[in-house]
Structure formats: structure tokens, C-alpha cells
Length: 312
Ligand SMILES: [Zn+2]
Ligand SMILES: [Zn+2]
Image (cartoon, rainbow, N blue to C red):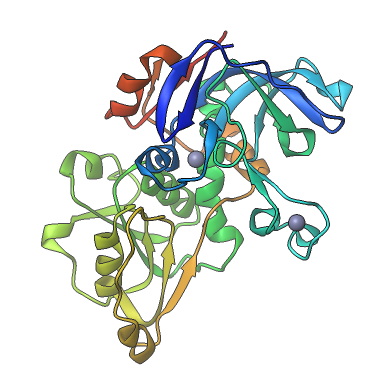
């Protein structure tokens, strides 16, 4: 089968073998796949040990399954497969399982015609939700994790540092609760997309320091964390959504002296994401779709989101 295989570099191949499934897995025919920032970071060296098919955001159709009622269904899937037995797995936190396998990062992912996946990671796409919108389930779930793992009051003053895809989704999720939101970014054209539901500010004209109860760092670059430190009030909270390819230097004394809380946040729940998407509460610019062999253009795309159309 055709697919994008990573082994230090990414290559397009047509000789990949069809995945085999075991007794609790499903075989998925991939329809659409989305490129995530994490995929770009893997290509730059974020997961040096990984070799296999890249990609973890997909919409597909179940071809074979340990649960026959799923065959023929349109599905999306979570990416962390835990051991099912440990402290984390027993508390629905398999994304922290020490023995977890991660789709497209430690086991074969979805930038291919077919993928094997543990059946319990699958979620059926509601009938009224298009494939293109459903492709945003995983990144939207990551945005929802901010309110899933900690409390944010609608009356809090919140800044989001970053004006990219992740920031756009986090901002829409928070705007639904009526939060007082300011987006701090570098690109006026990108910031304009937030105008209908948030205040915006250019980083160069940085808003008054230390006026936000909560600052969400979603830039993917270490400078974003430095800005977050400037913006957050003493005794406030920084929620870090970015992972960084390079090491981050931070003045921890400042965190101690100003009593700032720092909270990491990563993957989130799929069902609420599917509900928000099906209810049309979240809006996106169009996705830029490419065929697999055109992967270099797909990765270079400057569109809000790019990805692959693999079958129809
Ligand atoms: Zn992703
Ligand atoms: Zn586990």
C-alpha cells in the first residue's frame, strides 16, 4: 500500500505491507488525514527513535474489526494506547501510561491507505458531521483538555499567546463560556480571524504586563513561554500547550517569587469534541488537501490546516 514512512527522514512509498490486526484491533481504510504540528516536529527530530508510518489525525472507515458492529462506520481515533492495567490506565489517563503506544509516534500511523488501531480507541462520527470537519476532532479535543483538567472561570482574564491553529481552537472553546479573552500574536492577518470572538493584540505592542489571571501558551516556540511569563499576574496560572523541539530556559526563581502555577496540557476527550463539531459551534477555514505523493507541498502549506485525501 501507499504511505509516508519516517526513518530519520520522511519518504513516500508504495511498497508498504497491509497492516495485520490482532483480536482487539480494527483495520481502518483512511479517507482523510491531517498534518499536525507534532508531525512537523517529528520530522525535525522530536522522536529520534521512531520509525514507521507517520500521522495520527484521521477520518476513516472500518473495514475489519474485533467489534463487527463497527464495520462500515466512519470513525476517528485517539492516539494513546495504554496497557489497560496500570495506575494511569485505571483512571482514564492512558496517555500517561508508561507502556503506552502512540499512533504515528511509536507505532504505525495514518498517513497510509490502511491503519491498524485498537478498537477501543475508535469513535463513530455523527451522521451530520462531514469528514473534513471531523478531521479536527483530535486537535479540538486537545483544546478542550484545558477545561477538562482544570477550572477556568468565565470571569477570568485570559490571554492566549499564539495565533496559529491550536490557539484558534482553544480560543473558540473558551469563547463559548463567555470568557474575557485576548489573543497575543505576531501576525495581524491571523489575528483578524479571532476578531469576532476575542480581543487581539500584536506581540510587539504587548499588552500591559501582569494583567492576566490565566495565560495559555500555544505558540510552539520557547519565546512564547517568555511572553506568557510577562503577561501572567502574580499568583496566576500559565497553561502550556506547546511542546518544544529545543530546550527551554526559564527563570524558575520568578515562578517561585511570583507564585505562578504552571500547568501542562496535552491530549483531550474526543466525545465532547465531536459534539461541538456536530453542533457547528466551532468554525474553521478550509483545509488544504493533497495526495500522499505530494507530501512535500502538503507539509510546506501555509494554510490554516493541511492534510491528505487518501481515498473517497
Ligand atoms: Zn495532532
Ligand atoms: Zn497503563
